[in-house]
Image (cartoon, rainbow over all chains, first blue to last red):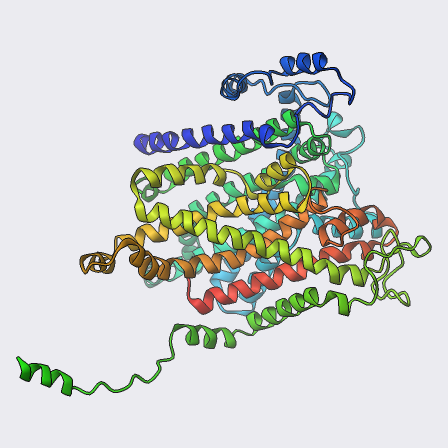
Length: 317
Length: 297
């Protein structure tokens, strides 16, 4: 297990380095000067140079990257050009909010996805299987930002049951775990859960069908095990892969929440990214993307390690 | 010696009855799959709609009218209503198919070509070249696709060319990875060894053995990416990172109509329904191709 762990970590370090290099270069592939959005159009050359020096844009690129990486490792992601506040603080606050709905969405998606996938795999070829498979295709084909709009139209505009967007009275700063606030999470979380639901249902269906085809299942039945007993064995065999898929889906949702957060004005990382793009606030864009990508990389490693713990076969690969 | 030669010549090779080949089998299996055929017909209809948009659309998609803003579905002269600038929704939806299809197919096609070349080269040559190439690919693969597309588009700025570029970069890594893994498997096969022993050079081996095995799975995978590409491209427009108004594009239409959901909710939802129908048709078609071509995974 230790060897497996070391191998995984050695593999991920260069990837993490590459990801940070990419995030660093994002600011520099952008057309124009990163400071154009704050500089007044009639700024003098001296003023431009001064500002460039403050932000560190006057040094050679490799030096800038080294300094930026060192600071990032210490938790300093620079200063937002639009607001002048530290990027790290803004990103961390937003990450918490995004985790809230992405986590809820993953749980909803996992529970329903497992249910549909299991039913489909167990009664393969039946009407239930076709229905569940259709739901899975719908889940991966729907443009989720549009689904969000339809949800708002139905549940907020027409029925008036749930709020159309925002994070409750007083915004995310005054968040409390009561219905008044939680009601704001429901629509975005359900909308978001549709994608992992489809993917998990597909995975679980294939897994269950595969496991039921293996020799040990008739052997268990021959031994006199009832359906529930067989079910327990199927769950035990399907769980590691299903959990791994769920972990990766959480990562995708964290990164992909921007569209849904825009629809629901949810104050998470996606909303922050939207602002950063709109105001061309490149340090904020860079910092947010770095944090989200690192979350995804870390989550991948965590999933691999958990899989290794649960399933000794994985370790030998 | 000469007797043997004569004997050989005497063997009459019957003209091969044209065997029903692989593609005929694929087509036969595909024809039986009613869902896939239906989806294929819908895709065909959407493609025709995009090509002949100028002739089909009842009105000019950019002609606005301040007097007829946000009309409901079924208004005389506006069968699917009018948008926030009084433009005919039906005409805009028909014309919008052009950009959406373009953004669904073109990035995937470029990524298909580039990703295959990268993956096959890395898999075939192996060694250090493989390590360096695939680690670079892994860096891009380490981003969730939506995030990568938005990061690149956000940094490069709005515009169709930039969206096209970012989406292509998003799809190259997964295609390259599949190409690389299949190529590595094929390279270790006995028949490749036999081909090499009988004097085939690298190009012949790649052309006959590697591509013959690699293209099928990547092609099927790439068709499943078309709907992803369309949804992502419309998503970028929805965020204001894609095409500029007044170009009719489904994602952008959804964005500009978002504020109208309290006035004409169902008109506002139409462009998304168009994206949904197209994307689900492509997905079902791709699923049908996958089972007809018998590709695993």
